[in-house]
Each structure stands twice: as C-alpha cells, then as structure tokens.
Length: 169
Image (cartoon, rainbow, N blue to C red; front, side):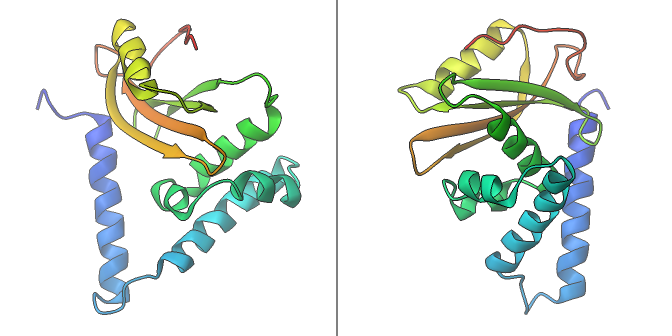
C-alpha cells in the first residue's frame, strides 16, 4: 500500500482502456499507426483551434516532428506542447513549462530547446537537486535538432509540485 500512488493508478487505468479497445477491435485487426496518429492529431487540433492557433502554425511545428512523437503523447499533451512552442520566442530557448495533471496526480515538466551533449543527464541532475522524483520521461528529437523532453515528477511526499518552483535552464 505504501508504494501505490495516483501515478500508478493512472497507468493501470490507461492499460485497462487500451486493452479494452484492442479486444473490442479484435486482436487480429490491430489499429494502424497512421490511423492512431490522425486520431491523436485531430484531438489536438480541436483544442488548438479553440485557442485561436492557425492550422498553418500547427503544421509548421508538427512538420519538424516524426511519427514517434505523436504515438508517445496524447492529444491534450500535444496541444499543450504545440501551444507553448507557438507562443514562445524561438530565439529565447530553452522553453521550460510545468503543469499539474489531475489524471496522473503528477506534475508534467516540458522542456523544449536545442539538443546538447548530456542534456538529459543535466536535466535529471537538476530535478534531483530539487528533490523531485521522476516517474516518467519521454525524450524526442526534432528534425531540426531541437529536443522535447517531457517528464512527470512527484515531490518527496509522492504528490504533484505545490507552490512555486524555480526551474533553471
């Protein structure tokens, strides 16, 4: 019981939903990657259009990303990342943002910037110095040499970050 937390609960729920979907579809007819990507992108586009972002801006950002990015994130994550990138000055990287996620009971940290030597090691070291526990990390590189690191963290008590925290580049 002391090892159970909201993050593990959210993973179990996600596994259950995906297994149910696969069983309904039939194990002999797996969903094609292209269909999955289009569905995820449409979900993100509907959110982004509500915020006033043009399709041209969305396409310009997404053209720099490969299919793996869209398969590893859901529509709400992609919409959040895309909105952040679109509203950020490209000459002032890195972009670092954080949000608390009720669905996972964690804090999601998004870092977008130029790829560099030992970048992930430096990021994890900084989070360790802040006494944060990394639950999940997704590292994506873009075609133009940028990196998009998404990390889910807990504070030492196993909760999302509360209050303000300074994330340094």
